[in-house]
Length: 279
Image (tube, rainbow, N blue to C red; front, side, top):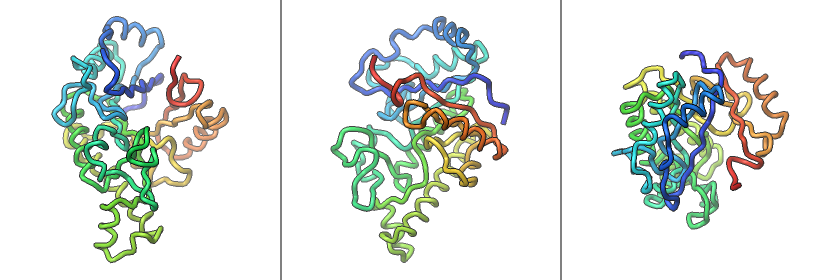
């Protein structure tokens, strides 16, 4: 992998289908000027957000209903003209559009509640399980991006190994002659499901762009989980001082990561609270 660029921006961009005129005011010259003013040499741009919509024409997904041009392609073209890298973001663990169509693909806790929102009809985002047909949908979306766009990397969000008790995970353990409600069995399957997901992502990407950088984001990787670290080509240390992490989180994390022999960058935020606010 090439060395990481020096000044990276993560352009968080989660936009409900209720919001109109998406990208209508996008101007290439203004976008390039902002990147130059900020001395930015890499910016993560969006293929798919937590709401599930694509920000480009798509056969693997559906373009946002209020976007009428290829915003992803326009951003990549503008950035590359001034030698700025464009890793591409896809929301992997969350996809509300898919959730509404296929609630049977949701991650389930032992009491059958969902995560992040606690039930299907609770407001908020809902975590999906990769031990379901959703994984093939996601892989097709990733394939479309690496095949059709000059992405400088792939950023996959809201992913980590978790014990799940959805119908698919319960059926998998029963087929193996295991008790699905034994916590250790569920934890072990969660690890296998996650490893299968990362392996299939790598193979999907390498079929078109061998070695393309990939990062699987979970907010942070638990210390000691070197196996999870090296499922990535590099690390992006999410650390918002006012978002629950605190001001001493990033120095500690960055010092720890220096022992792992892997490139990393820091990801902080401009917000007063967590990942976004009004005003």
